[in-house]
Amino acid sequence: MSDVVSLRNQTSPAELDNDLPVLADTRTEILLRVPPQPHSLLRVSQVCRSWRRLATDPSFLRSIRARHNDTPPLVGVFHNNVYEGVQRFTPTAGEDRVFDCPAHWRVLDSRHGRVLCLAMARDAAPPLLVVWDPLTRRCEQIQMPPDLTVYDYGKLSGAVVCRAGGGDGQHGDCRSGPFLVVLLIGREPRALVSVYTSKTGSWGEVIPFDGLPTWSDIVPTPGVVVKNTLYHPVSGCHILAFDLESKAFAMIPHPPEAEWMDVQVVRLDGGRLGLVVADIFDFSLQLWAREDAGDWVQHWTVQLDTLEPLKLQPRAGDLRDVKLIGACDYGNVIFLWTRFGSFMFHLDTMELEKLSYDSTMMLGGTLYPYESFFAPSR
Image (cartoon, rainbow, N blue to C red; front, top):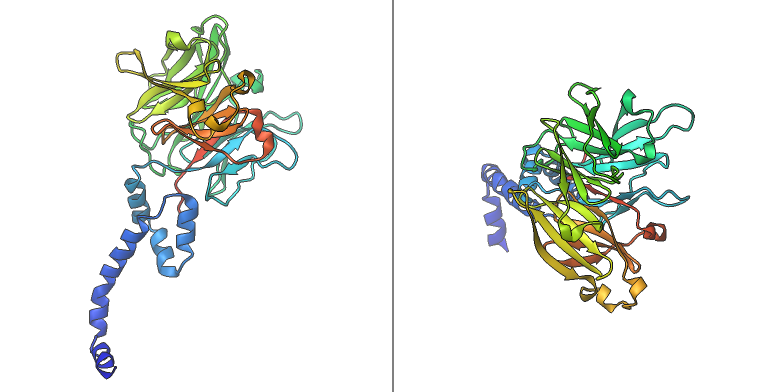
């Protein structure tokens, strides 16, 4: 024992100081392996002061985002079913924070850590748009463009788009960067689009498009952004493409095999436009990808009743209904409703994961995934 004490007493403060960078590097390597979900970083930051300093260090946060390919994790989903006592946000497994979304806010879109809501006034005042960051509780109110105030707000669609990243869709944590708000409304043959930019704090002129096909309406559900183009669903058999740079429009027809079927527009890895098709008669899903030449290519078809846990359910015809209700911007994940519950479906692994939330969400309304990195506050 005396030999051990003697050896310890021979270690000088200078030698200990030389070891500190090594210890810091070791802590960094350990914490970089922590899952990127906000609740994980929050718990890490509460261990001790040194871990908190590291977990809130900007360079560490950049490293953890890069380690996960700038793909923000899914924190939870918002929905617009408003009932007394029902939470408008459902966290994913492991998350314990619930965001309070007011009943008079209608969620229009969620992307890059921001949620776009239409706040309906309780009196005769016109509604406002709210760009909301639930993690930081920051809200930015935006007046509606005057040229759209005469339309039915129930049919209004919108998108919030980060402008800090590149065209490859990899944005990292851009909640403090510039953004656009795109509003769309229309019924054949005309669609109207208005674009707000946070850099100037103003709306541009309303842009008309007289190319909607017969029997087509702008569907009030979220679209997807692929590179510099917003792709928005249109009722019927088409997708409306709006170039955010040139402000040009294009109509993209569905694959002939998917005409008049329930579809979900998705952004696939590699910056490609994808289309998930639900066949309610066959209780199956199809994945199509749009190639650079403009052709749709079918990648696969999967029977839902061959996948766990749906293969354990009865196969009666009217119980095999399926409805597509949302998609993540990242991670190749969509959401679907069945009479046996609502599920996350992973397009790359073809795995189903049942969502657990209040029974009022079983109605099959649109889900708005909230994906975000999180930096614990200092």
